[in-house]
Length: 442
Picture: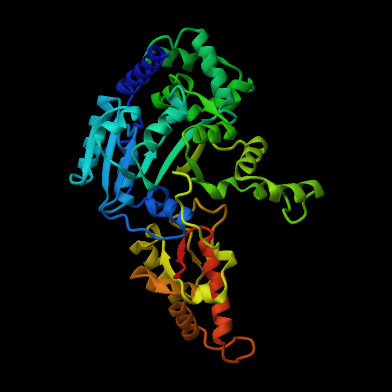
């Protein structure tokens, strides 16, 4: 078994030595890719688990399997003043990662180690957040990687990891089987193997199922497309149930899918308020695992089963915002998500207020929602102080009363109670996407 694991590891190492991933130009910046930074910011996952806002300063973040450093760059950009530690088994990839971070000005608080996940304890470090992107599905058992990361995770720390979906990539796995039969994956694939795959796929009729479901004409000259799909060494797929089984084997607790808004089961039905009786009665009783499993069986649209997890029973218990009472709201503080606190979005909001135009708050971070989130310029103006510092809910209510002191229909003064109701509904709607973060003060 150990020999098999060593052989598997060597195949992976060789593939990434000759074809480092991802092949993103060194100069490509993520500084204004707020959508990507939103998910790489430790604030997002920590809030989902604890309903608390954390400062990333001095946090220690691990990029486990950093490749060429594109995700490490995202972690560095998204978590200001955090320490970033990168590990990888490919010396060539690690070298590119170092060059990338240095090119973008990250020279301090960055470490690089030639290391596999199982050997993480040798670093003698404990991490607040661990990012393990596009790695686990290459290991003989995902639980091995999860156990290695858990051993160096702080009690309240969070792991972000993912697995390839076997249901989403079913046709690619069929393609890989064909190319294994042809002997194209016996050794580390190169240009010759890529050219053979290219010729075969182009020779197939367009309506042949394998070509129709996996081929892309616009990527036929992209070596990465072939290496990460048709000729991907040790690539394996998993189901949601197998994902949960791996977490259980590693004694880790599921927190959330990373793109949780895109796993909403109710979004798959034409009218979720008018479901068949059996579904309406059974769906509310389903566990998180069963809901995700059912979603995947119905609609396997995601390449990755991308999830956050942590030590069991180490999250904070909290009252969901939907269940808050007036007393909770009156003592709460409001934060703008760090990736929305950029000057361009603020300038855009100010212009919308001046022009009395609706404000699309989802413009820079659209991924958490299925549709654009549009709000009126008057109530959107209540958010402006959040660019400077967090605000109490009562402060935002007072600001709203100054903006809208009278009811436009009756011309009667707006009461404190009505203003509070309007602001709480407004904030509840935005908190669903984590555009604002709400902390209840006990």
